[in-house]
Image (cartoon, rainbow, N blue to C red):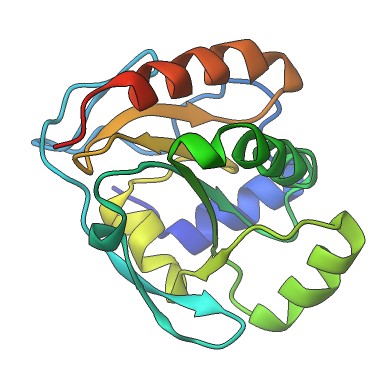
Amino acid sequence: MRLPLTVLLGVLSLTGCARSSTMPSLTPPVPGGAEQQGTQVSSTQPLVFQVKRYPGGEPYDLVGDRGSVVLIDVWATWCEPCRDALPFYENLVREYGAKGLKVYALNVDEDTRAIEPFLKEVKVGLPILVDENARVAERTLKVRGMPTTYFVDKRGVVRHIHEGFNEEFLTKYQTEIEALLAEPAP
């Protein structure tokens, strides 16, 4: 039986989210979905989703970023490791943005009023996307824990998934980003 993402996120908020990449699975693998093999993903289908931008509600469609490498971090204001991860990702976009990396923070909070105070406290300026009712996180991305980070190649295919966050991931992230940026555009 699969629990709704909101229940799983509530459980994670009580346990302090995930602080490492060795987090246990919270949901069973989905047949026919992109399976994780370490941080490599076996699916070759482009990721497709639409959400709204924060704070104005303008539409965002991932298809519009084809040709760029995209990092999508799924986060919530109550997730302590997310506080550490978002500034880290902002540094990555400073380092690799001119080379074609785009970074988005996909928020799954039920109440978007919590976003502004969080961003002021953490002092990040990343583009924020709002995932209403966690539909994209649950149905499309199959998020199992917070935070979860997706590296999407220039063709729109998810190539790496990282669950949890630890600053020790920096070298691995840089290696993966540099390899994706070096690939030819579609």
